[in-house]
Image 1 (cartoon, rainbow, N blue to C red):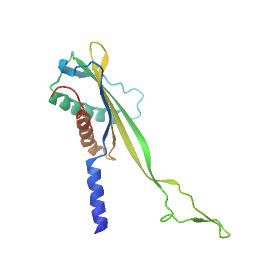
Image 2 (cartoon, rainbow, N blue to C red):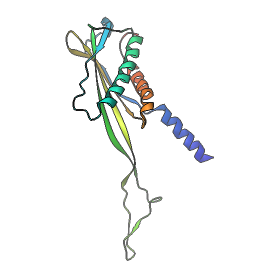
Image 3 (cartoon, helix red, strand yellow):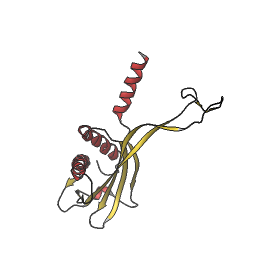
Image 4 (cartoon, helix red, strand yellow):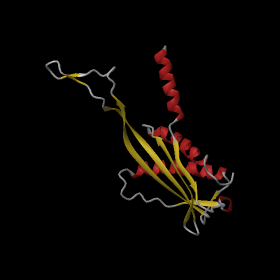
Length: 179
């Protein structure tokens, strides 16, 4: 019963996500209420190993950003007041744990000579994604607001859209613009 509860708790925490807004900052003297329209910078996929995967996920991010900016009163336009710039970094990371003498037995080295030393051991791997988001004044070419959000990415592509929506929404919780 106890293991079932722990499994349920782990599943509940996993569903909540681990997204974290790393930074959110408005430029000195910037007033986001003066802007009414936005557009995205063009994306260059030259040199990418898997551009289709990147483009699919970037389009999902753009759609989520469109929804958030529209909810804040901005409209997409061909000749915008604001330009949206985004960058994505995905890193493969190792999940580790520290050995414990209570659970990890000492190694026998012969002649009654035992040795034990605490060490980090890899227990799994995961991918962590970081989205850098910039709003740029289109006329002046100056950044007026920027934010960064980081989250653990799902293993399956079908779960990516939900992760993207959750992270972009979290990013816009810190948005200082009009509502």
